[in-house]
Image 1 (cartoon, rainbow, N blue to C red):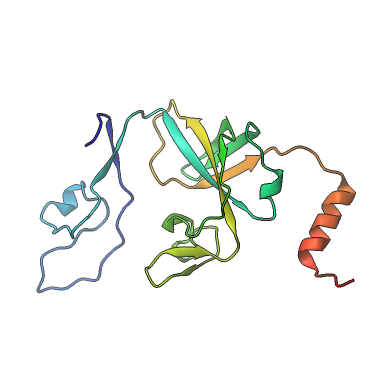
Image 2 (cartoon, rainbow, N blue to C red):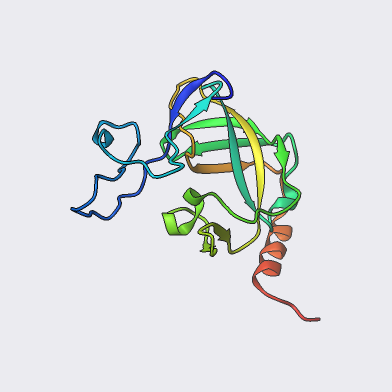
Length: 178
């Protein structure tokens, strides 16, 4: 490894089809006991090395219609699917200038994620509507975080009048030709 740190498990592999004439294939986590005699395909990710288990980077995907309201320093409440009853407060550190060309696999609707996406020829997931990456540092003193966890983030972008909200809703829902 390029630096010292802690071993963090990788996401479980999908269940492969069985073939009685071949050696057992990797199922789940490469480090689990059930994979003792399994063959690992080339470039199989075995683990991640995390320099600090308390500091994590949240990668929040924001829709194009909402990115104009997001600014560095705004407060964020983060809920993780794996720890649903705990709120992790943080703030916006960085906002991408360009929309994301591809999204992480765990975020794509094909993998039960929340974002509608199409699969490219290379097997990557392209979001159907433009998404921008917003980064935030999160502190986890419980040690319950894992890499590639998913959840929901609420960014406090300020207040807006009811009239302005209705106008935004109508403008995004209908196309007016004047």
